[in-house]
Amino acid sequence: MVPDILGPAEVEELRRVTDQFVHNARNVAANDDIYDLEESHSPGEPRVRRIKAPHLHDPAYARVARHPKIVEILHGLWGTVRFDTGKLNMKSAGYGAPVEWHQDWAFYPHTNDDLAAVGIMLDDMNMENGPMLVVPGSHKGPVWDHHGPDARFCGAIDPEHCGLDLSRARPCLGKAGSVTVHHVRAVHGSATNFSGRERRFLLYQYRAADAWPLLGFAGGIDKFNELLLAGDPTIEPRLAAVPVRLPLPPAEYQGSIYENQRASDRRYFATVGTVRAAAE
Image (cartoon, rainbow, N blue to C red; front, side):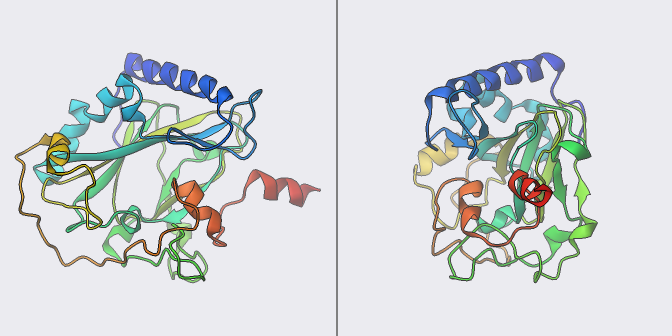
């Protein structure tokens, strides 16, 4: 966790833009190319759990994806930096959905694992509003199976049979404007936001210039090189001896991780529904 990467004015601009996206979701009835909606979403109470690829939909999000302080952190790790994509995960007060345990590497393996996700806190994060939890050292371990009983990809690790001590997971806590950096193979997840406070977490994925996606890049080499933020382009991918299990056959429910995990029976975190059912 690195504090004070974004200043108050930058955070406020992103919050304002995000509030407008949520307001506009009143006119959206189902998940689409921009929105992933909570099951309890309605026109009267718009409830968004993710804005997909926000950098493509507003210049404020696009600017922060190339923020010089973020690029500097990653350049210090790898020497070169290429942007991948992003999402804004939103846990609204009192019902924000959990994300089950997973490794990002399972979704998009590359020729080497010099990849990381940078999380930008748009709100203060504490234990009550569903912060990201990361298992220390798990990035040096195996790539766990993210396939369900039907052998299809489901985007979640089996918490009961993976052999990981998930009680060791550390919360990523901090003030708005702070960022987290986690390795692509780090096991992580987050609980439901049962608090009365918002938890908006802007996540951007980055990779070294010589890390190439094994599933290909649909935009072609010119578009791929447009994503380069530091260093020189290369057509020589670095091949590393890293464990890979492809996310195939694809998930029954395509789209975001929330949709992928719908097909999984691997539940670790309580949801609003399960808590209410237990209370009744």
